[in-house]
Amino acid sequence: MSTQAQGVNISEEARRWVIATRDPSFDGWDRLSEWLERDPAHLAAYEAALDADEWAAQLLADAPPPASNVIPLRARRRWFLGAGIAASLLAAVGGWIVFQRLDSGEIVTAPGERRTVQLADGSRIVLNGATVVKLDSDDPRHVELASGEALFDVRHDSSHPFVVMAGSTRLVDAGTVFNVIRDGASLDLAVGHGAVIFEPGPREIRLNAGEALHRSSPQAAPVLRRTNPQAVGGWQAGQLQYENASLDQIARDLGRNTGLEVRAGDGIERMRFTGTLTVTGAPEEVFARVGPLLGVTFAPEGAAWKMMPANGSRP
Amino acid sequence: MNQEDQIYGLQQVLLNERGRLLRFLAARGAEDDAEDVFQDLWQRVVAVPIDSIAEPVSYLFRAAENLLRDRRRSNLSRERRQHDWYEARTTAEEVPTGERALIARQRLREVEKVLAALGPRVDRVFRRYRLDGVGQAVIASELGISLSSVEKDLQKAYRALAELKVRLDAE
Image 1 (tube, each protein chain N blue to C red):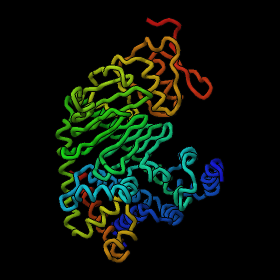
Image 2 (image 1 turned 30 degrees about the vertical axis):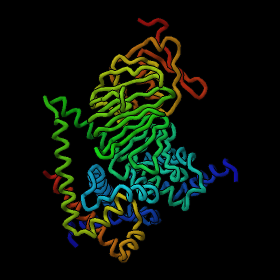
Image 3 (image 1 turned 90 degrees about the vertical axis):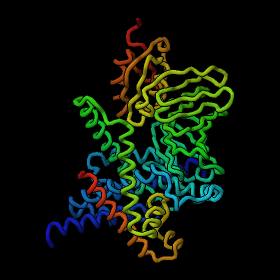
């Protein structure tokens, strides 16, 4: 057999392995190990086949469903309730399925864990650590952010808008990518693409790409700010971008992104920072890297970390 | 069985299968990262009660595979981003988002054309399997065809998409 023909056969074999591993009932892990061990070309072919598969699936997942596959809304709801939730979560790109939660339609990440969930309509939610998102069994385009942070990449459908509830606050998509943080009583919303309507009604606020809002409690007035639309949801890539942000907010963001508790020491709340922090890598690495930029030090305090001004005094 | 036993259940399985899992991780190219990935698995498994998992060993292997794919994906996009960053520094302009979306739409059209050309059954089998996450046996019974027909349909689809990607990457 010529080398080229051999190459094609290996590619075909690799594709069959990629197809097979995707089946929920697949159990040939030892045989796969064996096949991969037999020849380094097998691993290369396997990874190439994986990349091709993910490329195609990502394109399709981002697309609206083709006309022939459109299912009437009523039927779609039932589908979503039963096999639909399981099916749409099984199609999740990377991440874990916490089986016992499927019935209640709750998605939970542990501290420091991230997960991407693809919904049946082609929308996508990326959850940061220690986040709880609840799906509504009656409406696949109605979700609740119970706590934590998530990026919503919503497929726009003006006849059936995507709604995110944060407590009793409604956020309605108008064709968007937006990031929401729910941290205790506070709510933060930043729009990367498109527009979001905050609390539709007489006092609604429409936010376009590059606009953001922070409300420290349900009784407080929302404070608007501009933000870099490209940086919205930047936490996914470990990039946190700030403009004159207070360091106690940054302490909370560091906590959320490292999966550890970061407490703000005295004087931290008076400090401000403008710039971008990279929060990839182990927490100790992150602290060593951001400390000098922020003018703070980090010290362990029990299971948590305390962030303190570096010198006793601060300008 | 109380809560603690349930948590230890899955971790115990992980310990029992450690050898097999490490072998798999090594074969998958994890090498120096294999222990790291194993630790990662260990942490994550704490949150999942064992009695909700029908096949714990299979579950763990699949989780390991997913972890490896996550890592690969984030390494690739980090490299791409670094590459893009360097590109952006040296060139005066970036590709506007509108144009990026246009390219993505064109590629999507190509993918859909390829699937459509293979026939409605192959298209449906592929989408049910890859996007809806339905098992091959279930798809076979849904459509009233044999399991081997489902397998062949999937092989056709994956092959055609792989060839498409090679073609588009060369452009």
